Image (cartoon, rainbow, N blue to C red; front, side, top):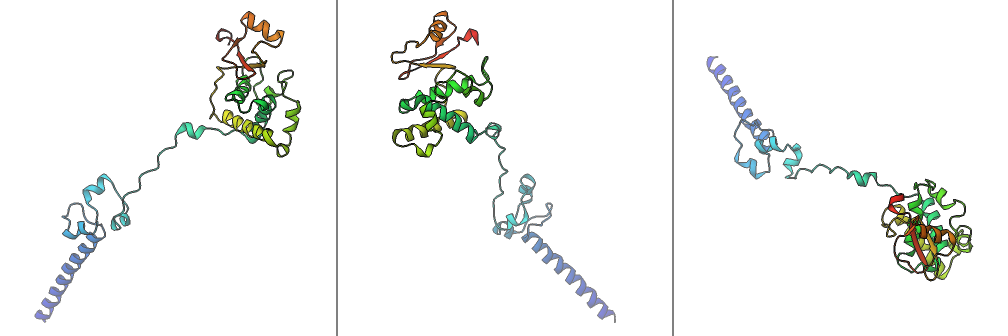
Amino acid sequence: MAIGKTRVQAGRQYATSRGALMGGYFRDLLGLTDPEEPQPFFAGQFGIRDPEADRANPQPLFASLAGLQPVPPLEPADPQVAQATTASDDDVRLLGRLIFAEGADHWDKPGAMEGIGWTVRNRMGAPGFPKTLDGVVFQPRQFQGVGNRQWNNAADPSALTGTDALAYQHAQDVARGILNGDISDKTGGATYFFTSPDGAPPNDFFTKKLESGRLERSGNSIGKFTFVREPQSRR
């Protein structure tokens, strides 16, 4: 009986030690090793994690088994990009329609339509002008283009043909670029413009304002368009 008992105890000890050995093997293989214990040779061969590296850069278990690199965290959104706004289609159509009505015959003159659009944009919120695009465009006795032939033609853009169709599309592109901040102001802050073949003021309003210094030219004329602004001291 003593011999049998001794054999049973020996068997249990063997099984326990064998189980511990195999358990340790599989713990090592699965990346579950004790950081205080040495790593078996095959740990490096199978991409099993190094405890020191784990503490510095912990990774999911299966990423280690597959030899995958850790996924870098997402970069935070650029606050300026996140806050960027996009102009509404209605605003683009309205500004583009006015640009077209005022400058359809200058659509191929670089800077002409951009100057018209920026004159409107610069008025928004400026002293003496409405704060909204609608308010600026429809302010009485300001823009001769409102209600003219091209303005009325633009009510149905699909009916436009030839150069009018090209001019309207360009006016829409310019309007979108200005309202979205993609086209910069080359007028120097103009809030007025007038048209004349030689750049001379066409009426007493501009003549008197320019002569008195209450208005000043804000740059060179573009075709028949001359852009005007209030002096810096009056802003």
